[in-house]
Length: 280
Image (cartoon, rainbow, N blue to C red; front, side):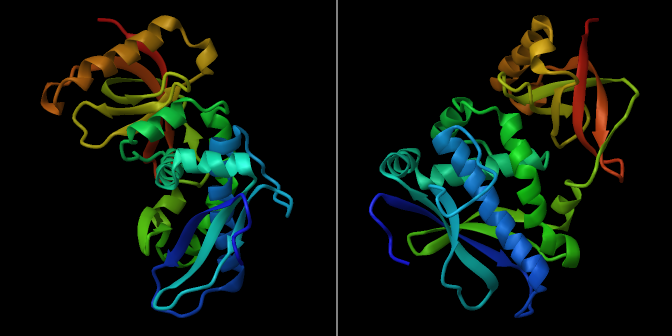
């Protein structure tokens, strides 16, 4: 399909790590649809400041299948942006930057630690007019669909950005990441933790921390809406992040919090819901 005037494309591919040359049609079409929906919804949020969940041919941002490729089982597709204003805005954002942001919101949805954003991507994410929680809510269903093959057959699936004749990985999804979309439970017990804040979004109240003695970070947020969180608690968390920003991990300063655990069925902690700060 030839590119129309005032039309811009983010070219992507989805590659399934399987030695077979076929996949179940139902799971496959659901997965491809999930990939297009997810990428289109993040593009909506970045370019329009809103998310359109129902796609029709008149939508200015939508997914289109493209010519397939040999050697691996997968599918080329594009997120097509139509209209002079939106097309120009995509160029201003930058397609590689948009792919960074797609990765960021996928990782946030999976409660995993995303790579540090570039300055440009960070500026765009922080300046969004739509709330992060609204974006994450809109991505949950297509992200589940995108995991259909991994969940059913255990194959890993790689979402790539096609640019300048090469494919740059945006994210790889697996059976393990599919498990992070299963129903979770919040434990009622309040537990005291000694933690260091490694990332914090002042607008959403979400971030990542490391529990003293652990080696990997875990997601955290507040147990109530950020609008209801006391200013002193938000300042304490932001302050710990600021202190540790200039220190190497060996010298991080830890703070004590009380929190409830959000866990998967196998009791793996995916998020801590902060209730309060413990003052010695």
